[in-house]
Image (cartoon, rainbow, N blue to C red):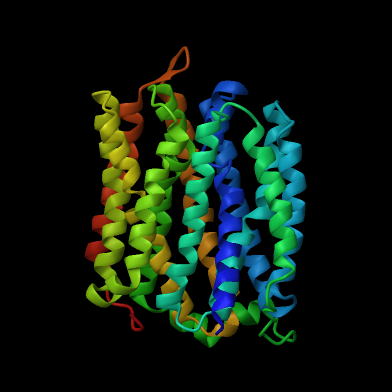
Length: 396
């Protein structure tokens, strides 16, 4: 594969995550403080991505495997996504905002699994090459966070407008990508794909089932981070909260570029356990940071994001690509999104919103130590449950 193609995939990953990173994590502050949405309403907003992940990534993955090239689907999704973000930036009532954000999520969420699929389609050595491509998504997230933080616009609708413009750019860029043609015969129905011998063998592997269930469960506490860490840091008076949250992406880069070496040094069991453990322990650091008003403990918790995300989620995506046949790549990645970003994140967003609502002290203040303690304990429970129940996957 030509080196120039890798650079093109790196730019695709960068644009994809810049669109998402420029508004998604920091918007919690805009929702809570500017639009005056309740904690429950903010939880519902972030839960909309989970509802979308239950449906659209799997269906678009099936379409990409069977009917349309991935780059064409990405173009359509990004253009409509850009329109919806522009509309959302001008809505200030929850009753109208919620159905609009749900529609946006249905449009945009599939682009993550499709971006992974197009990378897997063209990369020859997934374990080595994909982390090097995916790291540019993390760089984009850092860039977006630093930009939003330095401009001090977390309380405004400007991040959504920035994301809208970038979505149109990404749509145009997708048209220039090399073709990723469908590989499944159009004569096969979705039922035949789901009941294929290859997928059945995959889900009869106990190690694989334990891994998928554990990752779905860890997305419950993970939702607390994406929805409420930025509002929390702003509430306790951390300056440039969006920029400092980029610490998590800095560690993500370091871990990601080390992943090929770590795959050779450690078993998948210990890599994923470490990721799950970090998801839990980080919330206990946030609990202590909120209790003692310690900014450095809070930032330590943020910095663990790289270990949590890469060791748990990214390594599983790579394993799925290796394990499933190439013609089912987009379908399998879509299914993984359904289970993690869908089922797990939906429950997580609901519980996160209810938790913040329950511990709302009034006057814009919250009992953050209790809010963070709950996902911390649950995350550690999932990590040790995985460690006890996991058995080696046949292709590990």
